[in-house]
Amino acid sequence: MVHPRRTAPAAEADVHLPVRPGANPPVLNGILRELIVTDRIDRAWVDRHTVGFDELESTVMSYTPGHAAELSGVAAADIQSAARILGEAEALLSTVLQGVYQTHQATAAAVQVNNINLVRGMIGRPGAGVLQMNGQPTAENTRETGADGDLPGFRNWANDDHVAELARLWNVEPSRIPHYAPPTHAMEIFRYCEQGSIGLLWISGTNPAVSLPELARVRAILSQERLFVVVQDLYETETTRLADVVLPAAGWGEKTGTFTNADRTVHLSEQAVEPPGEARSDLDIWLDYARRMDFRDKDGAPLVKWHDAESTYAAWQECSKGRPCDYSHISYETLRGGSGIQWGGERLYGDGRFFAGPDECESFGRDLATGAPLEPVEYRSLNPDGKAILKAADHLPPDEEPSDDFPLWLTTGRTIWHFHTRTKTARAPELQAAAPEPWIELSAGDADRLGVSGGDLVEVSTSRGTVRAPARIGDLREGTVFMPFHYGYWDTDDGAGPDGNPRAANELTLTDWDPASKQPLQKTAACRLSRA
Image (cartoon, rainbow, N blue to C red; front, side, top):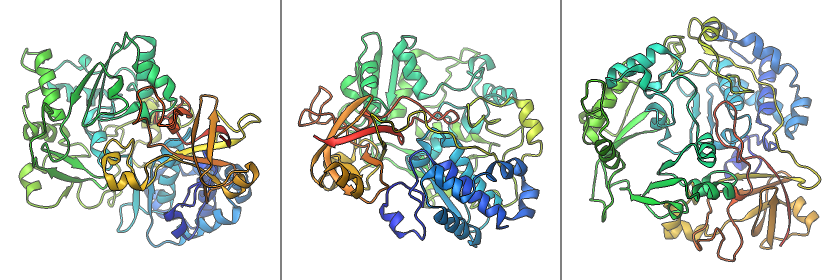
């Protein structure tokens, strides 16, 4: 397990790799090199089903155990042990979450995890695969439907045929579907709001006044008089307090709809009770908005032709038909007959087909260092037969590293007791009682050097702000400070905690993102710590 802290799962691992924040790529490249030089890869499978091996091999050869250890802070012997375990495994399942995704080389690192499985031929077979888990348990279907800013059905915005197909489904001109540049990601949207080119921001089911980095900036943006903010949510949050209009949304059990897990299993959730007061389901709100805006297709008919959850799902079935995430055979009736159905069947890629052909792929890819999208002709030349791509990446240092003024690493993360920004879990008495307040965690060595004991009120500062919370002495690598990111401001309206001190970890994180995925950085920042 790769993690800067010795968490409960890390304590159970055969090998724990306590990586320096932001240094996942050298560890993974070191493991890949060991797999190659010890001949623990499936060369026949690689030759038959992948492209890019020669470049990958050339890149990782410089990441000897010693060099990878120097860059990552992980012992060379542990990197070798991890490679041996992975190389000798009869089945290999790899999982990845925000510890990889919220860094400056998020995509580069996630791709190297894919590469480990690919060079071992550990995909598309029993007990083997990769679960790149986007975040929330149901984040899979937001990607499938295009709710992350892409086109629905894993369509490629740079593929004119995909855009034309979607235009036919919706009966609009292709020019009405934005596809002349990459989708605008969340951090760019906030920048446009800050500059004034966006005047209306509609936020649904998320709490950016806690979850986004550099919260003083986020609050300033949301508080602008020229920006009209609509927030649609189940409960009052730090973000609803900054809204001009709040739309109360129905929660789970108060509406009907489907959701899809990371293993592609589709479930139907039936409405059990009516939502309270004026609350309405998200779908009802958006359908009402579309009706009031009088959106029309190119023939003058209503653009949105569905009216409830089941008819909306039927439209999605048609939209996804023939795409990798084909729901056309999974009806409400079939979902009511069992506990869940996987699109694509029980297992993908067993036939060596990766939905990667130039005419079907979701994306032509990006440069992992710059984020620049590849041109269609480049992709066709690289991968004409639609094989799995082994994409190499060198390690790049983070934009912000420890210095004389800020000598420690700050990383943020999660605790088992809370989910995301505690919108729901803070209202569950047992969960709130288990973890009512944030804390600042540091190693025993750093605590001794700084004269800090467990329970002391300590202060962490970056160039963006200062946060105070009780100290915990934990089992994490020296030179690293950890804070859970869940906590915002429940007690006051002025951006301060109950004792008048900011307590949200994202007061301290920086406005930056991975160039390829556009995921905000929340795992690497330079800080200093002292007793308050």
